[in-house]
Image (cartoon, rainbow, N blue to C red; front, side, top):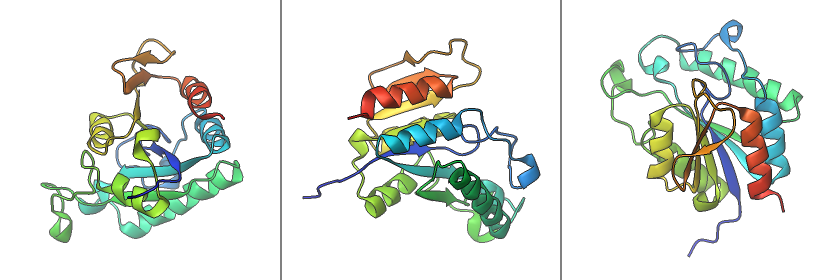
Length: 191
């Protein structure tokens, strides 16, 4: 029987870490969301692993290359490190079941809403998913977290009217404010 030793904060990239501008792959187009660094620093203080899981079908659609993605990803990780808000790992899926080109046109278990990237992170970092949380801005993020049985899911919805966290169900909260998520993490995970 597995004994899981760590909990994690799973983050979607486009829409949570940065503003979603459709297929962001150039540094000049990458605009960090306010408060993301403070949220990650706080989650690290609460001993959470920080894992990014991101669909990157722009690669599979031929809009940008894996090399371009890796370049912006490396730059992004460097900014987080400089802000003392290190990310443990980024998992990405370049495939798309209908719009991918060549080898990238496939229904991949890693592509959200499937939980493949979450399960890879669980195995690599020995994560207890029931004690972990996911922040995503799309239904595919929410569904991937549910499919992996992550214990707490936060729908970061910038169009939501209230800035405070609101419960939609026992496992699902909604907010448009990263500061309120950070405060929630402190209450839930601080020893």
